[in-house]
Image 1: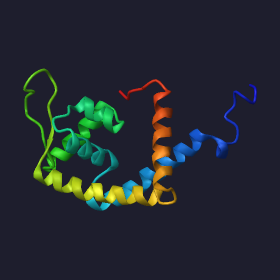
Image 2 (image 1 turned 180 degrees about the vertical axis):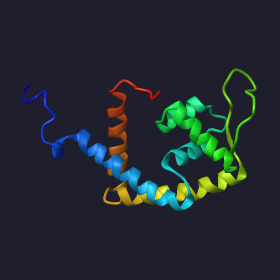
Image 3 (image 1 turned 90 degrees about the vertical axis):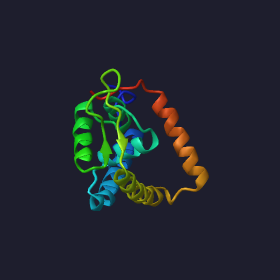
Image 4 (image 1 turned 90 degrees about the horizontal axis):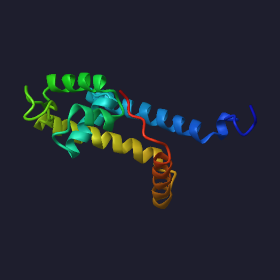
Length: 151
C-alpha cells in the first residue's frame, strides 16, 4: 500500500477529526438532553416533527440517521409518554403520519434551547463568517459522497 492510499496520521485526517467533532457534539447533546429524559434520537425525532408534522417512520428514520426499526422504538416510546400521536390506521397507504402533542411541542422547545446552547459553545471559537464557511464546506463534502441510507 502506497502512502497516498493510506489514511496517514489520524490527527491529520479530516475524517478522523470530523468523527471526533461528531462524537463530542453527540456526547454534549446527550448530557443536556438527559435531564429532559430524551435521547439524541428522540430529540431528532421531535425536532423533525416540529418542522415537518406528519412525517412517516421511514422519513423520520432517514432524517435522524437511524434504522426504521430503531425509529419505530423511538416513536413508540415518545407516543407512550404522550409527546406525539400516530393514528391506529394509515389514512392512505401504509405510512402512519406522526404529529407532536402540546406536551411534545413543549418538550421540543426545552430540548431545542438546550441543544442550541451546545452548538453555541462548540462554535464559539469561530466567527459568524467562519461558521457559515464551515457549514457550506461540509455541505459540499457531504454532496460529494453518494448517499447511504441506514436500514
